[in-house]
Image (tube, rainbow, N blue to C red; front, side):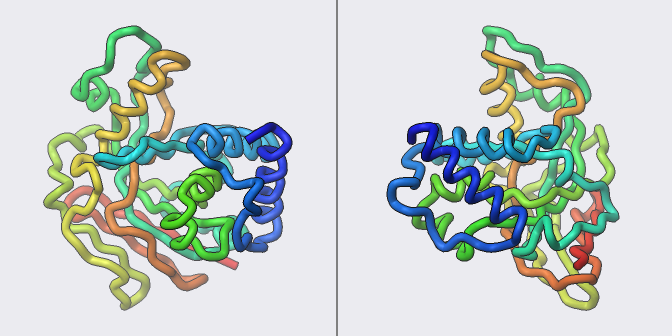
Length: 254
């Protein structure tokens, strides 16, 4: 994509963010064809929005292309949270384990080992309020993934529970995850993260960044869903529980 096309797509996405109007599909001449195109669009959106970037959302599923996006400060909340519907009009939520750097992982030539990265992390249970600027999120994910990636990988807002440093003693492949709203159980399952250990994508990110900026203490790393995304109702708290590890609560209000 040339810069004119990148800027045109970025402006379409920003307009959708600001108005809540959904996009059916991008015109053929504006479709990203690889992740470099998607990244260029995300960078352009970030420049227009102008919000502080506080973290990275990364997907590193086995056998799949590694993709990542930025997390904006204005879309990061602490539990219990009240998220304006204007930020997440799609009204989808999913349960995750997220991470925060407790010390720097600076640039270097030698690859970071898993344990080095794990020891630099604290973890919490989290919600992602998934939001797409496309009208049909699933169809975009399935049929035109680089458009889905360019849309900040459907990042809406994040809600973080209490961070804890003892996360390595938990086997998240065996942890029961429950999401409820009022008396309704939205999802209940055991494990479910695509890499088993949800910290593995953080290792991938550390090694992606070791040639450039590295990772700084305080940086948030969002590594993917255990539950997939589910529709939730307005103005009623949603509660998520990783059994034995922690809880989070969020309400989409509007």
